Amino acid sequence: MQKDNIITILVSVICSVVVSVALCATISGGANSASDAAATAGNTDINKAIESYLVENPTKIREALVLAEQKEQEEAQKRIAELYKANWKDLSSYEGSPFVGPKDAKITIVEFFDFNCGYCKRLAPELMKVIKNNPKVKVVFKPVTFLGSMPTAKMALAANKQGKFLEVYEALLTHNGQITTAVVEKAVKDAGLDVEKTKKLAESDEIAKEISAIASLSQKVEIRGVPTLIINGEALPAIDSASIQNAIDNLK
Image 1 (cartoon, rainbow, N blue to C red):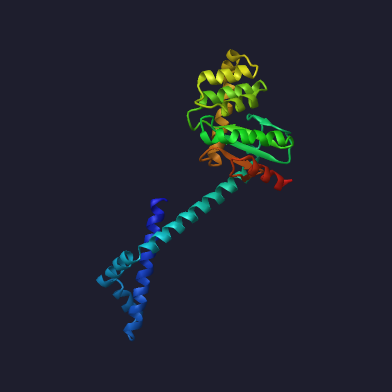
Image 2 (spheres, helix red, strand yellow):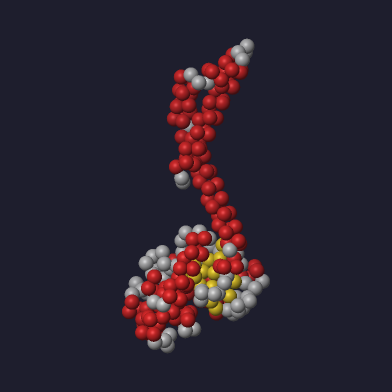
């Protein structure tokens, strides 16, 4: 949680104690005016009361901090949900991003992923099941390079230009072990592509622009981690085919 939020909570707790003590002073003083109570609230007794409250009620402070953190997370999720909806046209666009399925599909899934991400490797075979079982669903792939996967992402997008993205995607993300240059080149070759031609295309300005566009979009919609799935503008927190299929069925 941010430091400012913690300070805000503590100040709120202290203010509550101050108000409580001030009210007590007003009641017990009888003829004392409100200004007298306020003045009393500023003396040393108030400081002692605050200190005593904080010492004797540490669980209350922890509870307040937990609630504040939950609220912060809820607000962040709400903000991101609004960003997904506001930018859905760009998110679901197949221009510059590999995709499978009909261009005008009623249901679209967008995946932000990194070739070096362990959880992305767990998701990939599950997502392939979904793709094979739902030919009318469009799946748009947006590779990011958070984890040093720039060369791999470029090669995959170069393969996409030659109609072989999905083959390379599946080969790399189901590979057991580190994705090295040799592994990438083998995946490209096994997909039936010329390795040298693909390497040259990977270093082209066109691919560089696509990588940059995906990176900019990921920042715009605040992609903080991968894999991130979005279905028809809504977050889809899942890495198993059953949950993804259920989300698809609910939209039919």
